[in-house]
Length: 580
Image (cartoon, rainbow, N blue to C red; front, side, top):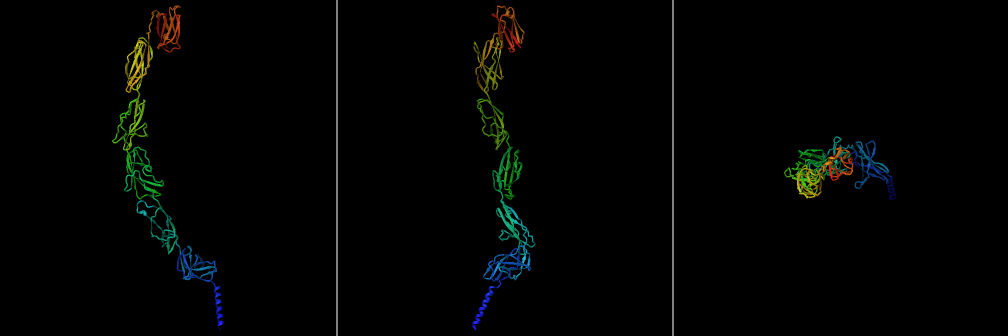
């Protein structure tokens, strides 16, 4: 009895084993943990499974609207040993139509198994479009002062009724900000925020908002800073008629080329032209400018903090000079011209010969007096650093006097001679003259004259030499080289023999080309010597003849007065003739 029962139990066990080996796998989808999701979101699906699956098997989640199934993007499943459940995550497509009666199931690929639908329905809500948000925001870094510039305000606009906007500070960080998004302004740089909106618990895609915080420029530093406190204060000064440049070139410290400076005149009567402003130095005056710097539109501060005072000081008058020309003598020590200032506190400055430019000196130039000539110097007066126009001062170095005597000549006894004395230097002159003849030297005569040349009349009774010994004027005495001038005295023209003179005929008078001389009563035994003597006493022509008539050629003789001298033996007769 026991043996048949044991056999029966063995058969039943074998049948159960065989049945379990060849049984169809079963997938059972569990109820969903949530009943409402947003399109594009991820859901958790739990399931149980029995049976054997192939090594290449994959589990997928499908979504059904009651008319068909749509396979969703599904992650790898995980197993919870404490619950005995498998779980996978599946993504609802963002384009999934809204609906309230969706179900899900789990399917297998090896073998192909369709799991049971989830016992709970799933509502899929539509994913809203993103809110309206600025794509870029550009802000300036916080200026040196001002509370209002410490924050950045981001405004979002909901595009769906009832939607609530949200702002995230990073793609993966969900730190939510207030409804009105007021942000503490960060430092210089670029930052990205993300905006979204939520409707019925569904959030839109996040759109980026790029915030750029730009740097601010340095404030203007004026030249010659003299005060602080509420800002920087500097000053520059011009003299009237100086060539001025813009305040950018001379007035403030250099700034980078990309920094824009706004110039604002605060006060003053001094005029300016252009931008950057250039002061007008035609008139004296004062003005104060203030500045604001900008870098790509960002100001350095919320109010003007830098100030520059520009002053144009008046040009002083020229110095007072009694005489523009100073005369000195060669070798004389010079002293500065008599120049005085025309303003209190003024000082004189001297220049070389140019009316502009050059190097100034507080000491007047002392010209050299080694040689005669003129040199012009310039003098101006300086008051409070400003210089007047220059006034020329000419130094005329006068030479020592010289004198030259001319007038070598021949005269006849009883005639006077005119000698000429030519001078250099300034009148009046005093000169010394001395004569000498065969009988000895005469006394030295001192003569004063202002005439140049001076005519010296002499009446020697015999041939006499004249010399100048020295000459003197206001610049001094000059010893002269003794260069004699000779006055030759010939015997007076006359008829030594009256009978011979009456026997002489001379024609034509005046003569042009020839002169005929006739000696009446000249015997062949007598010889007549005929001489033609010039005014200087030289024999211009001479001949001896025994003829009564002789013809003299005058072609080669210059026009003038001549003496015709005829000698026969010891008798002499003379005639004065004129050659045209």
